[in-house]
Amino acid sequence: MHFDLNPTDRDQAAEVERLIGLGATRVDIGQGDVSWVVMADPGGTMFCVMRGVVPPEPAAFHSADGAGGTT
Image 1 (cartoon, one colour):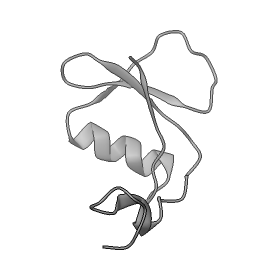
Image 2 (cartoon, rainbow, N blue to C red):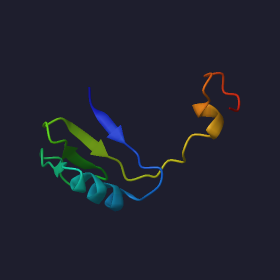
Image 3 (cartoon, one colour):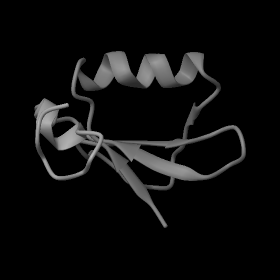
Image 4 (spheres, helix red, strand yellow):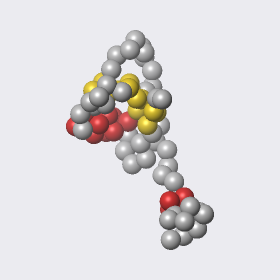
């Protein structure tokens, strides 16, 4: 499984720096000039940080009953 992360509250550069602060490292797998950053967690599992910022899910998406209603 491979994760592509899209930050919802910061840009790509800030997210990459945050992840490096948590122990992740940048990885060069020969990806060349692309819009995403390939990284690895401390255990070596690779993932990508995408450039685009996606809006957060609406609060109803995170409801306790899973029905999409308000909590």
